[in-house]
Image (cartoon, rainbow, N blue to C red; front, side):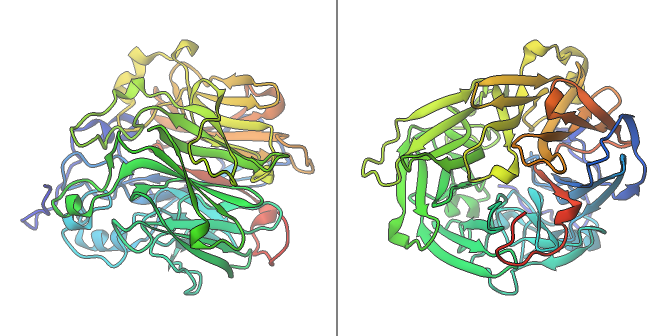
Length: 505
C-alpha cells in the first residue's frame, strides 16, 4: 500500500522510471509563442484552433510507480489563420492543481484511489483526457468527474461545470459524441454514483446546454467504459474487462485490475426514450475494446460498430490478480467491426470482421459523418518495417505510452490503406481531421497531428492534405517538447459561437 508522506518535506525530483524519462519527462510548462516556424505552406482556408490535452504532473508523486496518465491536465491551443500558427499552453486549474500548488507538493496518491491521498478533496479529478468545444465553452474531461469549463481564447479555467446544475451523475465521459445533424452532445457517466458502483447514467444534451433525456442503467460488472458509440437510433457501451473492487482500493490497491475471465460486454439501448429495462448486454470473448472509430445502422437495421480490438490487456500497467501482463511490444490492436442486431434475443456476438490489420489506435473520422455510414478513417499505426531507427531513439522514448510511428488512412469501401511515415526518428500522436472549407465531400480536407522528434527532443505539427496523404503539406516546429497526450479536437473559427438548439454544424 502506498501511504501519504509522513513528513512535510516535498519530493523534489521525479522518479527514475520510464514514464518520467525521455519524451515522457514532465514538461510543467505554461506560456505563449506566436508565429511558429513553418516548413512548407499552410493552406489559407484553414482557420481555427487545434486543442489537445496531456497529463503533465505539476509535482513529483509520493507513491511508487505512478501511472503515466495520472498527471494534471495541460491544454495546448494551436491557432491557425492566414497560414500562420500561434501556440498557447495552460494547466487546468482543478481543485487538485490549486491545492497542490499552494502546498508546493503532491497531495493526491494513486490513479483514481482517494484512499491513498494525503488530503481529502471534494473533486479529485485531473481533467486530463480530452478537450472539447461545446456551446461557446471548452470542456476539459476525465471520466471520473464533471468537466471543467475554460475560456476558448485565453484557456483560463472558469471552474467545475455541471450544466447549471442539470448534471445527474458524479462522472462524465471523456468521449462525448456530437451529432452533426442535430448538434446534440450525447454523453454518459459510469461509476456514476461513486467509486465501485455499477451505475451508468446516459444523457442527451441540446446544443444550448439543456438536458433532453436521462436514463440510469446497471452494468453487469463494474468495468471501465472509456469510449462508446452512437447511431441514429442506438447507443452502444463497450465494457473494458478492467474491473474495480472498492475493497482492493481501501487496501491501497489499484482502481483497475484486468480480468481474463470476464467477457467483453457490449451494452445496447435505444437512443431516444429508453427505459432501464431496455438495455441488452451482448457478449464476446475476453478482449480489450479500444477507441471507437464510428457506428451507424445498415439497411437492415443492424448496428455497424467499428473500434479498435485487441485479444490482450492493452493497459498492461494494470495486470491481472496474479500480476500477469503482456509485454508491451506484443500488444496488437486492429480496427474491427461488430455487426449487432439490436433486436436479437441471442446475446452472443459472432459477426466480427477486421477492417484494417495493422497495429493501430486513436481512430478519427470526418466528424460531419459521425453516427452515419462513412468511408474514411484516420489513425495512428505502428509498423517497424517502415524504418524507424529504434536503436538510436530508444533511450528517448520513455515508457508507459503506446508508441506509433506513422499515420494511416483506410478507405473502407476499397479497404486500401495509405501511410504517412514522418521519419526514422519520429513518433506520432492522435490525428484530427480538418474539413476543406466549402467542401461537403467526406474526407476532403486535412489531417493534423502532433509529432515527437526524438532527435531534437521537441514537438512538431505535421499537416497532411488528404488528396496527397503520404507526404506533409507543412511541418510546424515548436521550440519546446510536449509530453505525449491523450486526445484533442479541431474547432473551426465558424463553430466558436454558442449554438441554438436544432441548428447544424
